[in-house]
Image (tube, rainbow over all chains, first blue to last red; front, side, top):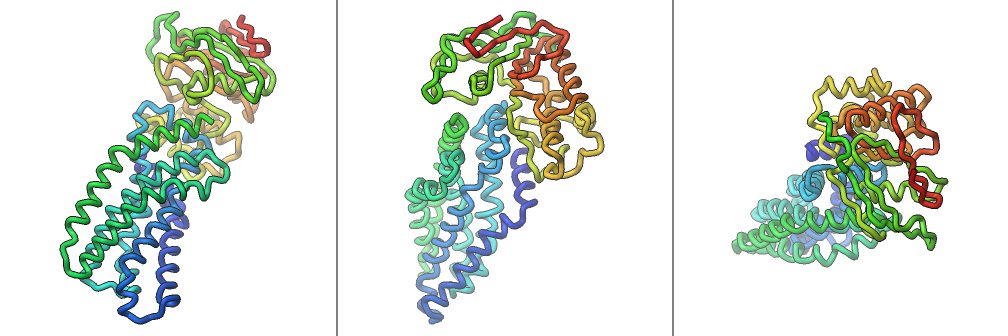
Length: 217
Length: 205
């Protein structure tokens, strides 16, 4: 039910869903302009570039997961609710992932085309983005929970969660690179899956604790 | 709502002390809130009424001395309306974060009617005035079956008719074995014994 509420709220603000995608599109368009349209060059950097941009747009959206609820008092009510905070947080972050990361993963073939990524790797790109952005959402939730009470926490959340984002970046790009060079990407995707399991198990616990601290202040 | 045994303790506070900004707001405060009791917290602005209420609710867990224990999670109405502007009044109650989906449509409509929002059930809440948004939040009082209510200055921005309806509701709730704690500047006009806790000097009467 919380999931439904969060997704409905997000859908009623289409601008907030569109923003990260527009950001992604603009930055992807800048690469050929900045680096030169030579297609081999673009294809070499494509996996890394796509992943870095996905990571940055995830960073942009993470901050707002709890902010609107904090501002109008709904977050306090969430902490007082009878259901376990772990599950509520999981619902919030799942809804966040659906409208940001999952959407990005589904739309990524278009951007892959703009950067000349070989067609063979597009499937792996979508899979790695889907798994990886789920981890990014869960980890971003921790930073969001800790900074939601601060008036100007903007850059602080980046400092907190970027170190945790880096393993996801490494394995995400490795998976796509492997697919480009014809090697099996399975092992890398499995590692991303393992990171996701860890994030699902522990992330919401940290996020819940962070929310309690932020509300207390 | 089931009637609970009179005298059953719903929340207990022992040796509570709080220091804010170098000022001691209260210290060694001990009391228990039992079923069927109505408490009014008094004190000037900044005396610590909201802080005490948040400690009672369990929202403030750090930064104070003493012990608080609760029999169950309370219903807390804070200063903010806790109403999502993008959702209609009905959706706000139906999808309330504290498990509102247990309510049937008729119950929600009835509750909104009791707070005087008949006809506004489906307008997006950002189109409602501040007072109307607070009423949407107060509609929860007509829906919930939580026994302990902690209402922080609930009469703010509510008109005279609404205030008397709210006082009636509070009276009915304590008569049926609930307990209500209300910090309020206005005296409560309820047909029930009121326990006063004054925070200017921490006197209990």
